[in-house]
Length: 136
Image (cartoon, rainbow, N blue to C red):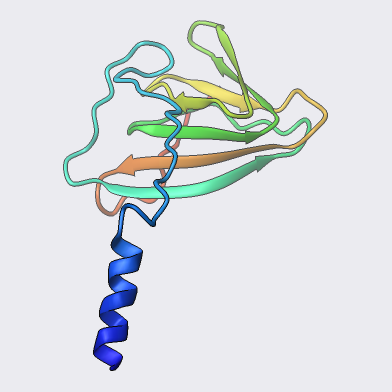
């Protein structure tokens, strides 16, 4: 009886007629960074994810990312400034970022509400930090 019950439950859960299909909303699709560089992932990467919070007025130091660095804006507006060109980008909640590679920049919360970003890095095995400080 247990086997028949298990088979019925499995059939019900797997049945496309009874199960709802998930909804997929494409956020972004790109083969280039925010400044037009081709994305090149390391061979056999480790994928690290984190949530970064910037309080109002918080600012990173000038840094570079040697490996792909992706961000999904959960809350607030983050300004990213390319210190090599002076160009800035404002990223708002709901936007996806493919960060510039090996290019000096910083991020800053110029707003009055916190910024929260889901960050995903694709790095070689053994690399724990995808940010290299750049001397001012």
